[in-house]
Image (cartoon, rainbow, N blue to C red; front, top):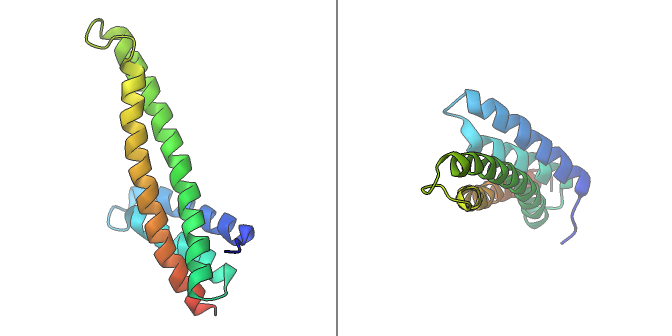
Length: 129
């Protein structure tokens, strides 16, 4: 499948901006951001349903992966602080285990970002056929 990196980059930017706005407007949320970003990537890539879905999927996956990394790093830092102050309860692996749980949550977020972005991309690609 041919990836239009310009379309993916713009779709990614729309997802990031939409996600930030979605944090303040609860009913819209992250789902709308993924759909809009995927639709932007699919529309700009053109070429129909398949190409639009592919470019939307890539844009959503990249945003989800970056969110996963950020969540994982925050989890490691918070888990490490708890591990250092928790004594025998936290232990030396507290940061690692806290980060692993956050990273697993991030992987789930990545899948959801990718799926709704692919749906939006398919719609965008279909509109700009």
